[in-house]
Image (cartoon, rainbow, N blue to C red; front, side):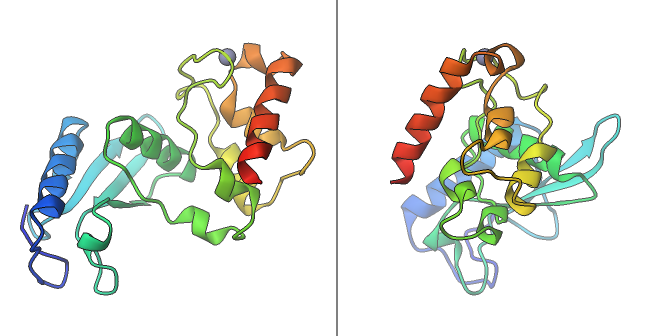
Length: 184
Ligand SMILES: [Zn+2]
């Protein structure tokens, strides 16, 4: 890693630099490599059965927003589905890589998606790890295609609950009550 912003400006803050090194180390633990040509740009080759592409975790900052403004990697992807990307974002979160995403910025400022945030892949009812069982396309649909009913918000239920808990109406009602409180 190199102690500089994307445009070559040096990082003066020890705190920012230490955080970058720490995140870099966390990224390596889950299979990311640093680009040889572009210091502070990390990537991971995805080679699942049906997905072949790359996911990036970019710690370089930009010309406009330097890395010291927010020392968290911006994530983006090439040739993998949004569904696979969301799953990766959750993995990055779980491994303390504090990924930043750009997709929520596309949704309306007061929209539901803003309040919901990125799910953590654990069922809100029983805590079961559902990262491999949720169809994350549903999240994209909810955000982009506005398949959001302000009464039902079904897609949120889909991404936050396991199969068994989805059948328990009381759990879901409580969850929605909490979510509504947060938005007020
Ligand atoms: Zn559950």
